[in-house]
Image (cartoon, rainbow, N blue to C red; front, top):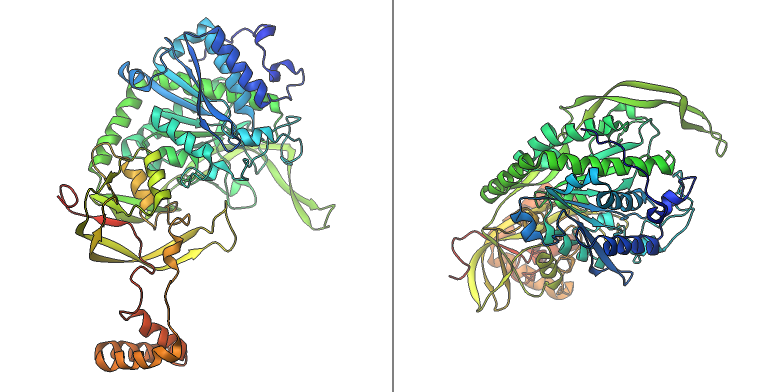
Length: 578
């Protein structure tokens, strides 16, 4: 259903965007916060504004809670059977449409009687600006591909971090404050507003939705069968036809659109770990700022309308997902696009052509806006798991790994400290191989393609070490995808355990030569393995240093903690040490 257009606001309530006749101005941070403070003062019975943790800029995040009766408590909101829509803006402050659109939407929800009913069954939580640090770093040049506004914020935060790669490692105070706010509300639907980069095409709005293959089956089915069709239809009715985010591997989009795999480092990938459906609306960078803001406004309103209309179905899907996850025994950890499956979408694009570059003289791509087209394009939107892990009863984490412990706690996990030393059998991983990025990515040399050797060992854990059980209301999928080292965005992948990859003791070869010879004399099986390796690998057979190192690594002299993942997988029943 399309609501009647709302009348324009009075002068006193216009935003900086609306006050610019050219529609090419976005609010500064001070203007944005002042505007919400003004709304909170004028509508205290429906709008609640509060600080919600610090950012790296030294300034607090804010939460704006919009409800029909002023209820800003998540528990009572749930008791009233209201869905929770969480909107976050300004993660990349150079992509500011959501900042301005949310200011306008919050005002209209307060002032326009025709919109009041939208809050009857849905509470809206808005983070006005997430990357406050970047918004304060205002300029008009860094978004070189973007058509306005005149001035805007910078993508990186005060630590030069891209916060949309920080949802798991949570190095920024922004991310840690967000996690507390997200866990507080546990929203049904999460929206984070963005602007695209990439090809030219006719659409003002494109959309990344949580990858349905990664969601619990009940949620994935609901998303694909009910929620997404309603959002696309609603935006079409509002004269903003949408298409999935234009991500492709060929020269132009006609080569086929490929769904974006939002692993947990991204906002929507993080949200999916907690059975929250996520959306990332991406307005088109080459469209003027005004239509980008208005399309974002209409998208947010369409989501609000649809969540209210589908409240029962959304609640049922999340409830089923929670029950199913509690019983799930194996969890996918890595994914690959399924090239054998696709659907067809009608794509409204521009003809891609080439012409000589005025810089290099070489052929360069351009999109010919005098040659628009609409044609069917393949859309590959299914991913398949490429590795899985069995769910343990619990993980045991030595207290020394405080950074990991802090992040687990900040994301809803309950960690129980051992009250005494216990010796228990656990599954232990040893790192056999992995790949590491040659250059730092977001401050880390990220690991991937992890190969493990699993050993069942009897390990002594000490008083104060932590046990986290994967039962009851635990954030099971979050725990699995952060603590299983082969997962794409595990804590191991982000370098939290790198110190175990380095040997702390070694040998002097002239000393160990005699010891190694004695070991081989006393252990014929070890000698046989060495000779077999030499026979199978001529390069190894010709390398005396490599052979000596092999003997060392296969002897009792090799330190047990080297390449040993310190987090134990406990598969028992009851309580550890019970």
